Length: 201
Image (cartoon, rainbow, N blue to C red; front, side, top):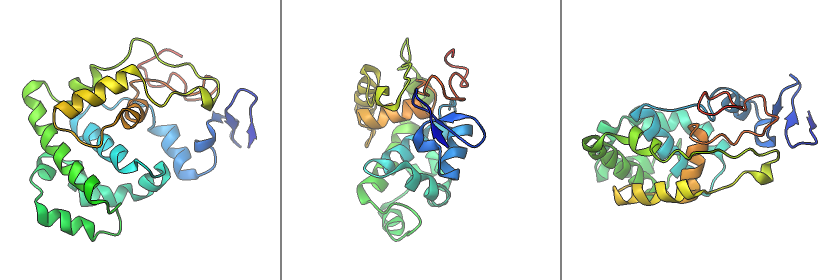
C-alpha cells in the first residue's frame, strides 16, 4: 500500500481508500460495502444510531468487531422488542462481555428504541432523520478536510434530543450522516466516491 499524494491510500488491488479503511480487512470490507450507503429502513437506522452512540469515545473497529454480539444482545435492534426492555435487561446486558458494558449507553439504546416507536406517529424515524440531508456535500481531497460536525448534524442532534433520544450529539450525528450516505465524505480519489446514488461524484 502506498499513500497517494492526494490523501487516499492505494491498496494492493489498486483502489484508493482512506487510511482508516486501508489495512484492517474488516474495516476495508465495511468501507467497500456498507459505509456511506443509504439506510432507509427504521430498524437499520435505529441500529446505526445505537452503534454510533456506543462508539462515542471508542474506535469504530471495536464496535464493528462486536456488532454480531450487539445484534444478539439487542434482538437485531428491533425497536419494538428493545423498547420493552426493563431494568433486569439492563443488568443482563451489563454482564454481557460481548458488547460495550456502559450502563448509560445501554440505557440510551433502550430509550432510543422507545423514542423510535413514538416517532411513528409523526412519519417515522427515517423521514425524520433524512429531512436533515444538506443541500451540498463535502468534497475532501484529504482526511483533514473532512468535517466532524455540520449545521445539519447540530440541528439533527437538537431535534432528536427534543424527541427523547440520547447519545445523539452533533459529532455522533455527523458520523451517522456519513455512514448512511446523507453526506458523502469519501475522498475525491476514493473508489467509493459517488457510489451511494445520493450524491454525484
